Length: 454
Ligand SMILES: Cc1cc2nc3c(=O)[nH]c(=O)nc-3n(C[C@H](O)[C@H](O)[C@H](O)COP(=O)(O)OP(=O)(O)OC[C@H]3O[C@@H](n4cnc5c(N)ncnc54)[C@H](O)[C@@H]3O)c2cc1C
Image 1 (cartoon, rainbow, N blue to C red):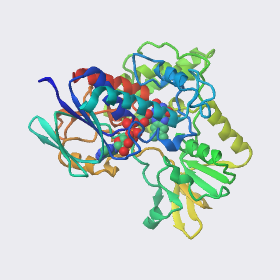
Image 2 (image 1 turned 90 degrees about the vertical axis):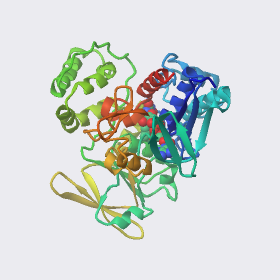
Image 3 (image 1 turned 30 degrees about the vertical axis):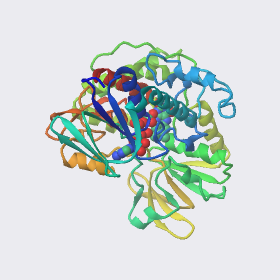
Image 4 (image 1 turned 60 degrees about the vertical axis):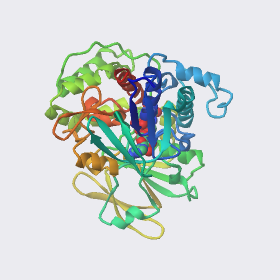
């Protein structure tokens, strides 16, 4: 190793951490990289791309899922090379195909393995949970579940998405009831089903649609109720037109920005409105960063629900399936917040509460929590996060959406000071960037960070 080499620890082996390791391998050939992932099945996959998601499609067409910002067709080329292997899952390979998430996980895992092969022992993936990170002079001591201690020059946190916050209930024992499934992102939600149950999906977003696809592929014939505060379903992609080319509109207030979106949609009636949302996407982070904390809170309160629906879409086939199930009377949407009241040996009783008061009570054989990743950092169950907060090495941003950090992802401690050498990537940067959860943004930020660490 050269005298300039550093030891870089990455915590979290999901897409963000894996992409970081690959980027560091390309840009920093002298550094030692150690990636810690607590789940043996997760390196290269994380929550979103593990093998349980064989039949759930990506929410982004193949053309948008290359790991490398400078090779936009890399994933499509990989699919073409592997098309025989995936004939059963990806019958037709093309840029607009919505490929199985498990297949994308295979791609990421293979790219990680390629980097490891090229790097020899310079990249290590260790299956172990990081429990503590302490500052020691200019360096960090990283301590793990299995009592390993590593001294690192740089630590990069890619802790990703956290399981949804539990559905409301005054009876804590329901949280341990096997009929309540708190995490929708695993195959466990389908185990023990006869296929004729009456299931409540708490949530009407992307995770709930994923569960519907998972149920259908297993031949589920029972009844599904979806329930959320506004009862809005995700909208389908429309890939018929490329995104509109839109210049940076200037630092607008959230209200002015919302009006601009409407104006642009009106002015471009000859194109699907989605082209406006996609055209604005490159500017979203800059606009978000120009807002004061009050303006951000205003956006979160008033505009977020509309923005999320417009921005995060599903493949047309998934949308159609949901519509068909509604028409067949097999799927019902309720508007309101669910509260679990009681559980007996066969069912959970749930009240659906409107703005003011409960308006309906129903019994379900399973309740699956699809309310989306926990976004309240104060409630996240992670020893590592709690110890970093207690030690003042990280601080929750005023919006509460993620941890405070600088433009390059460098973490800000509880005293407002930059913690040199400690970085965060991916969804953890939501408070700073807003648009930071999808691959396109993640790969740009990790390659930028890798270059700066050379
Ligand atoms: C169900 C789902 C589907 C999605 N689909 C798409 C899509 O189609 N396209 C798209 O662009 N984006 C999609 N996303 C967005 C997603 O945020 C990113 O694509 C990406 O998966 C985020 O990766 P990550 O590594 O930051 O997080 P995660 O996937 O959550 O990975 C974090 C990893 O860190 C590990 N970890 C946490 N704490 C520790 C610790 N203390 N020690 C060791 N390991 C630890 C966890 O075990 C986990 O594997 C999806 C998200 C979800 C939840």
